[in-house]
Amino acid sequence: MRKADRYGEEAEILEKSRWEPLRLCPVYRESVWAGERLRRIRKLKEKEGKIGISREVCAYRGSENTVASGEYAGESIAELIRCYSKELMGEDNSGQLVRVAYIDAGEDLSVQVHPDEEMACEKGDAEKSEAWYILEAGEGAQITAGVNTQDMKVLQKAAENGAMEPFLVRHSVQAGDVALIPAGMVHACGKGILALEVGSFGGITYRLYDYGRGRKLDLCEAFQAMKPELCCDVKHFQLKKPNEVQPAIRHPLFSVDIIDIADNFAISSDECYYILTCVEGKCTVLAEGHKEVLGYTETLLVPASCGQVVVQGECRLLKSYRT
Image (cartoon, rainbow, N blue to C red; front, side, top):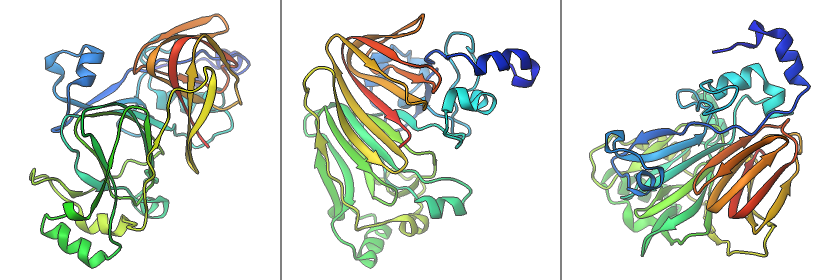
């Protein structure tokens, strides 16, 4: 790993230059509930196991991506942030990136809840709020988001007895749907769904209900974190006028825009990093002497110092960034 202090003169030059978009190596995680969509799309081999999660952009400890190609190939994104914060992050000095990951659910995920900032800080972590963009959904696909009672005693008894299902709010979903899951909301991604998850910096999950799979539950912590009053509004984003930006998510910690592109579209730099994910079609991303082809489900991290990029092709992109 190259360190900034090993080549101070080069680092000084880089501070004045523009960085290229970074393609990162996905971090795959096996899951008991995994489907086959990611394996098919990514052409993964059987030896990779049952892949349910693919972390596309993540600087969270223990899950950091490495750079896939170019000058910094093989280097940890977390270490690059440490050495070149301004070039990568701009004015954001958090040391963390908005997280982007895929969920490939062949079966229902466990029903869970994440802590807000106050509770997470007590555990030495950060808030975990997230949003889901549905890329693919089987017939009858649903997500769980929210509960239908605010009576905590009723919910606690149901959880202790493994009988949560009557109190879970289900939402039917289809490709192009977006759902915001703030910290404290009871939630679960349902079977038959390929979703892109965009979220804040934390990594704590408390499992509330697991369909009798026998895995450990975190009932005490889950009920401390739970905010039963929270409701979810699933929004559908149809294909709009080409080259139109649709605001999809506005959360205090992250935002997501949907951009439908038919030919050429320029994205200007606001001196802050952002993340581009192709969720439909295929495109080429051009940035001052650099070109990246972005296929279905692929992602690029665009550093704050990159400057304007031009996207060519017919595609739908998600632009994820720090609010």
